Amino acid sequence: MFFGINILYGQTTETKRTYYKNADGNIVSEKTIDSTMSALTSKMSKLGMIAYKDFKNKIEKGDSIIYEFRIHVLDSASLDNFIKEKEHKKKIIGKPLPNFVLKDINDKTLKFEDFKGKPMVINLWFTSCLPCILEIPELNRLKELPEYSGIIFLAITFETKEKVKKFLKKKEFNFTHIVNAREYCEYFTSAYPVNIFVDKNGIVTNLEGGMPLVVEKDKKPDLKNSKVDSKSFVYELNKIK
Image (cartoon, rainbow, N blue to C red; front, side, top):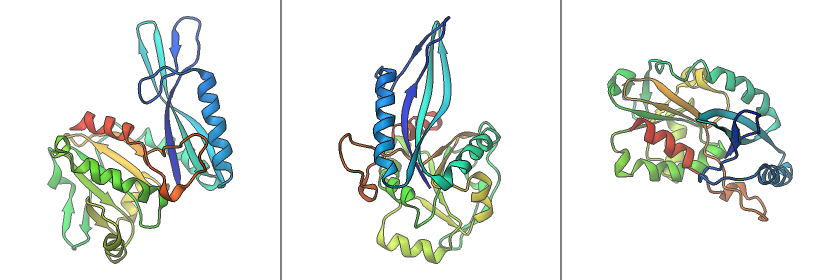
């Protein structure tokens, strides 16, 4: 399992100006980014986690270049899978969402064609996945906002309906729940959670890992009570609504 932290990052070239830009739109220095990485590495290494820097997008505007950059925090066993899945994502984004015919927790059959013409968010998760659980309150909040009322929110897991129902008795998760979907989940990932954004034409616009953790400077990490940053998730929602 892994956590992520969003940072926008760039590097100097001879012909274009390059910028370091955080998720709030503020310009930051390379020194600031390196300091964040160093502090994060120090904190997370105590928990057996690894901070890993990963380029996402390159944006060119006039004589400027901005590189979107993300720092993921992974356990060592997940790092190799993450790199492999980064390549796998390239084969999914921009393509139609694979068709599905699956059961929800009430044994109702749900088909992809039932949702045609509507944008969708699909959260891939399981009940003992800590990063999955940490983002649930924010997923619930966003789903209830009126500006996203036209979006279908699905949660898909490889687990049984009994296990999911037991979890939902203790913790609210207000998505439509699809269960016993191991093959479908494994087509997309082996590291959870994953959020899949699909436009009204059924095209996958993006595939993201769990919402990044909010890491407060000089505070002892407390993963069980950590908050998440939904800026990137909201950005993707606004693209498909």
